[in-house]
Length: 174
Image (tube, rainbow, N blue to C red):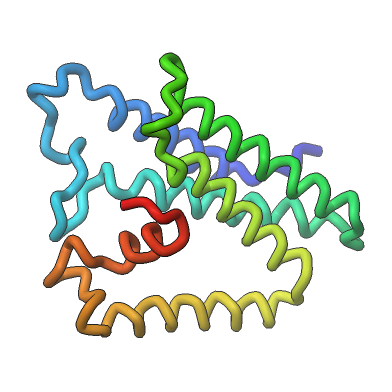
C-alpha cells in the first residue's frame, strides 16, 4: 500500500511550479507585479515560495523520522550526509558556470534549506514532541520579541532588519 501523503505531494508540485514561474517569468523587462518580490512592505506570491518549501521540508522530516523506532549513530550520519550534500549543491550552483568564489553567496536558498533540515532533523530525533513544541515556541517568541528592539525594527529600518543582522553576525557578510 502506498503510504505517501497525497496533499503534501500536491503542495510540493504546486510549489515547484510556482518556483519555475517566479524564476523564469519570460522577459525580466515586463514582469507581472505579483511575480516580483515585495520591496519591503507587503508580500507577493513570490515571497511565499521559500516558506512553502521550508514547510514541506519540516513536514517531510516529521513523517520520515516518525518511521524510525530508535535513532542511532547511522541516523545522524544520514542527516549529516544529506545536509552536506544539499549545502554543497547550493554552493556549486552559486559558483557555476564561472566558478568565481570571490562573489559566492553562502547563504543561498539550498544552503538555508540544508541548515533548516539539519536543525529540524536533530531536534525531532532528540526530543519528544512536547519538548519540540516548547523549543519552537521559545524560538518564535524570541524572534518576535527581538523585533521590538529599537535597532532591529524591520518596518522602520529596512537596512537593520533582524534577518540581515543575523546573516551579518553568523556569516560575516551583508
